[in-house]
Image (cartoon, rainbow, N blue to C red; front, side):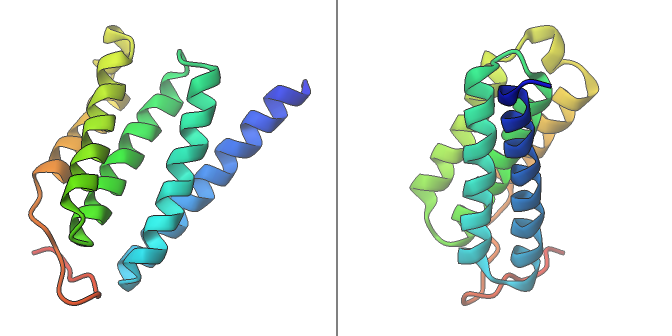
Length: 132
């Protein structure tokens, strides 16, 4: 395996770890920390997608990252940034191969983005409250 492939895989592994930690810290109510993990995940996946724009798996995951990032920003009362994150997710979907975006993973990523973008803000102080 050449060096660039190993580096790409390492970035994707790190992105997966950061996304997991973002979810964990969000559930604990640590939204600012969750935001930093989610931003790191999205940045790593965006970098990989920039070098390989036809990598649909990375595109799907980055769309989901943007949905989660938008949700975190919304819950932190940063509405303008939240809308920008959601729009980046929609832009990624528009830029993806049309056939691939109608595959199950593409549909699921877009559904997650739509649900999160349409969800109401979910905050109470700085602690995340469970959704009903």
